[in-house]
Length: 182
Image 1: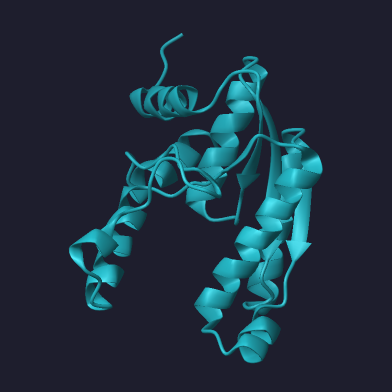
Image 2: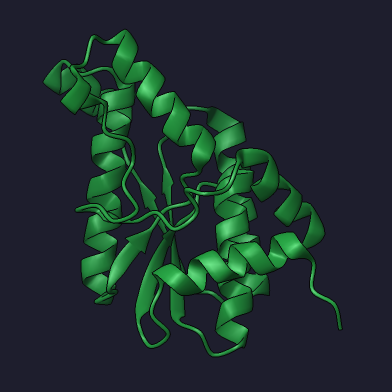
């Protein structure tokens, strides 16, 4: 059986970053990038490569659309026998209390929810689906904010909160991976 080169590339990147006998918590929003990550890890699990759980953080910011994303993640996890944990967070409440932007409050609560779930499950790390396009966006935003050269660091493959194994891929490649996997 021939394997599609993109499928091979995604699985190879994950195998290079994730250890076979560890338990990972996948951060899955319901977008194509994180759904590609979940689908690839579900396929790797079937081959005996890693244990995976999923955490979906529901920010309460987009109403019905947000709830549809949550339902998509839950259905996917049920179909692929991945344990799924949903964390509901109050972004607007934190933003108002702490005088933060909605984006900053969402990022803080998302990382807090993922970290808490990871520790509760005794998982080894959180795995994110950040990609090459996210890298470019991060640099551009930091440039626009006036960051110094040392402040322009991109997303690293390994960070304090987790792993980012898909940084070599473009968003369009991850969307194509989703299409290939149905």
